[in-house]
Image 1 (tube, rainbow, N blue to C red):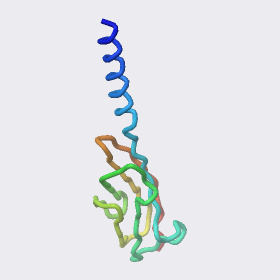
Image 2 (image 1 turned 180 degrees about the vertical axis):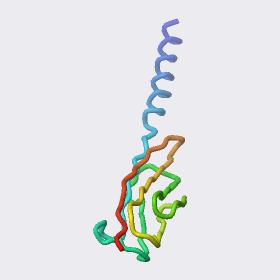
Image 3 (image 1 turned 90 degrees about the horizontal axis):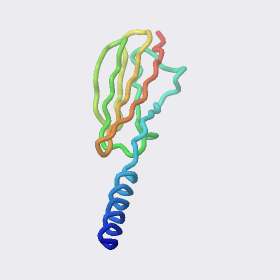
Image 4 (image 1 turned 90 degrees about the vertical axis):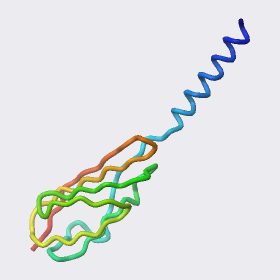
Amino acid sequence: MKKLTGTFIVITLILWMGQSCTRQPFACYSTDVSPDSFYVMQPITFYASCSNDADSYYWEFYGNEDSTEYGYSVTKTFKNPGKVKVFLLVTGKSKTASASDSIIIHP
């Protein structure tokens, strides 16, 4: 009986360690242009390069020209000045994380 209980404890510990080793993804992004230099009709590339443990990348842009994009990096050109909400959702090993911020597009 002791051997069976010890085996059960070892198997439970191994399964628990395997689950705890699955890391939670981290979402963040950067751009190729300084945030104070976002202008109308200027291509801006958004990168998820500072995100960790992610396999897929979903982007939403709201408040200027609403759109959704997919990929590690996306390039956007905004036709109108104003505020844009940027949202990034990353997924890795069935877990998700997100980052969002507002940017200003200058005339």
